[in-house]
Every structure is written in structure tokens, then in C-alpha cells.
Amino acid sequence: MNPNEIYDPDYVAALFDRCSSSYRTWSTVASFGMVWRWRKVCVANIPNTTNNNGLFFDLMAGTGEVWPHLIRAYPKLGEIKAIDNSTLMHKTALTRLHQDRSHRISHLKANVLDVDLPANSADCVISTFGLKTFDIGQQTRIAEQVNHVLKPGGTFCFIEASDPSDWLLRPLYRFYMDLCLPLVERLFLKGARDFSMIGTYTKHFKNCDDFKNALTAQGLETHGFSDFFGCATGVYGTKLN
Picture 1: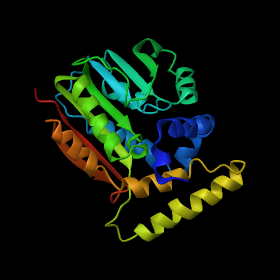
Picture 2 (picture 1 turned 60 degrees about the vertical axis):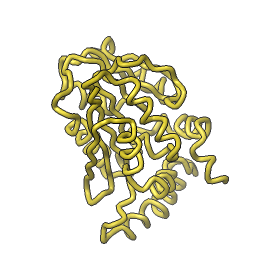
Picture 3 (picture 1 turned 90 degrees about the vertical axis):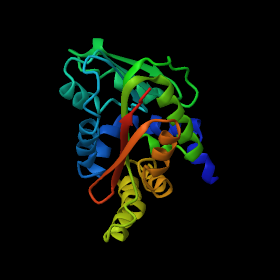
Picture 4 (picture 1 turned 120 degrees about the vertical axis):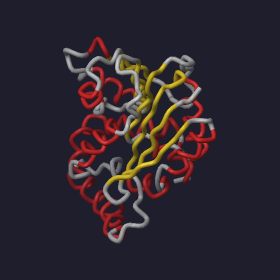
């Protein structure tokens, strides 16, 4: 496989189409429940200056696992506009829009790199576990989109599974990601090798530092954070003007 192929939007969309039916369960099991914690951590790091009644964009939204955390934290938020490039992830999300909340969530099937987002429209942009499927150049484009869509004073927060380079137990972590996950997936998911791509993506992604630098280059105020020894990293901040 060409190393650049894993960042091709069509490749990524097809990968998540194949994962869509079991994504929620398998991602929770494979991460020992940490994905649930990290989505909660991401919402908790949204700057407290955020307009509680505003419009939230969820980029690379997947099946909308962060929405309950968002609505719990911002019970009066106006709308969640979710964007994802995977057709089946999109359909899965649409079938589980939390019946009593569906009127507050709209879903756009689109590639975040080239979708025409309305300028200065969002009060907050959030994304959980989508960044690792983009190379540095694509991350720069996403930073441009964040700056473009946010209102002055708008906020953002991203979190991503990362490679904890300074952690003493990193060799064990990499053994699990690179060898154990592929084996378990092949044994229990009909020989699939899709979820185990997280090992490849995290190794190339490393952490959110490059994305943080891209956001800073856009003139956004940015701050980094990490969780569980750097197994997840994130960035949050504000559009100042």
C-alpha cells in the first residue's frame, strides 16, 4: 500500500463505511472504554466563553457519539451540525439521533476538506477521533476551515488518539495497537482489518502538535492538552477576531 493512500478521502470513507455497523461497540471494547472518557474530556475542555445557545459544528462526526456529552453540557444549545464523509456512518448516525433531540441535529454528508461552510456561522467547532486520518497538509486545510466557519469569539476543541512517545509503557501500548488489535479483529470480526488501522494512523499522527501549530498560524488562540499519559491529545481555543 502506498503510504499516502491511507489519507485519501475515498479510502478513509470506504474504511469507515465498512466499520460503521460495529463501530460503537468495537471502538469501546478495543479502547477499554477510554473513547467514552475522551469524548467527555473533549467537551469539558471547550472554553467556558462558548455561547451556550449557539450553533455547534461536529467535524468528522462519525456516528455522533459525542452528542450526548454536548447536550448534557449545553442543554440549551441551538443546533449541532454534523459533517462526515462516510455514507454508512452518516446513515447510522441518522438512525440514532436520540428521538427527543433529533430536531436539534442536522447531518451533512461531505468531505470536510472541500465542503463550502458558511463563514462566521459557528459558535463552537468540535471533533473527536477524526484528525488522525489526515496528513499534515490536510490538517492545515481543516485549520483553515475552523477559522473560516467560527464567529469572532467562537471556540473549538479537538481530541485524538495519539502515540505516547514519552510514556514508559509505550512499547506495550504499541504491541497492543500494532499486533494484538489486528489479531483480535481477524479472529472476531470475520477477518476484518479495518479497526486495527488505528495503530497505523496513531503511529503516523503522533499527537495534536502539528494541528495546534496550524490553528495558531490561522491566528487562533490555541492550547494543548493530553490524557492518560499522552494516549490521547487535544487542542482547544478561541477565534479572537
